[in-house]
Length: 198
Image 1 (cartoon, helix red, strand yellow):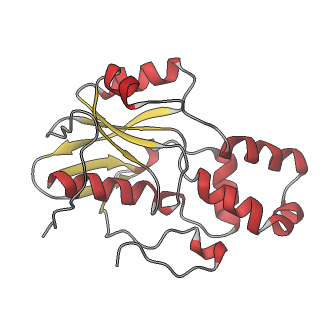
Image 2 (tube, rainbow, N blue to C red):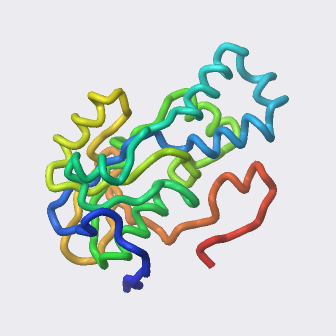
Image 3 (cartoon, rainbow, N blue to C red):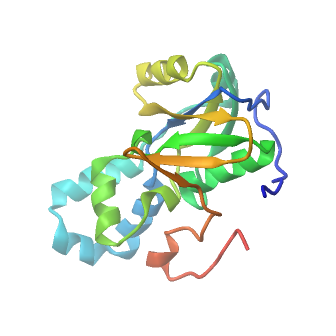
C-alpha cells in the first residue's frame, strides 16, 4: 500500500499518467565530493591525479536552472535529487501524487568517473546524494531533455508516470520494484548513522 507523502508542489504541480520523467545533471555528485574530502588518501593510492581532478570538476558541475526556466521548458513538476539519491526522489514524487511509475535504470545519467569512485567504496550511486541534479516531469520528456542538452547539460528521459501505485524499475530487461528509501550511501564514508526516512 502506498502512503501519501506530504510535500509542497513545484511549478504547476502536475504529475499525471503518461507524463515522462527526465533527469538533468548526473547522479551521485555530492556523495563523490564527500569521498574526495573523507577518503583522499585512498583515492590517491588508487587513481592518477589527473583522473581525480576530472572527478572534482564533475562534482562541481552546476545546472543554472531556475523554477521560471524549468516552467519555460514545460516542466510540470520536479524534485531535487538530494538525500537518498535518485531512488528517494522517485519515491517522494510518486508518493506525493499517489502515482505509479516505470523507470529504466540504465537511462539515468551518471558520469563514468563518478561511477568508478562509487565502485571503490561500494556506494550505490542511485542512493547517493547528487548535488545539483533534478528529477523533472513533462508531457514531452524528449523535447525537455533536448532543450536541456542544448544548454550543455546531461539530461535523459528515464521513464513514465503510470496509473496505479506500482513503482517499477527496469534494468536490462529485468523488472524490479523501487524499495522504501534507505539511509543515504554517503553515510558509509562519513560514518554517520542518520536515517531521514525513519
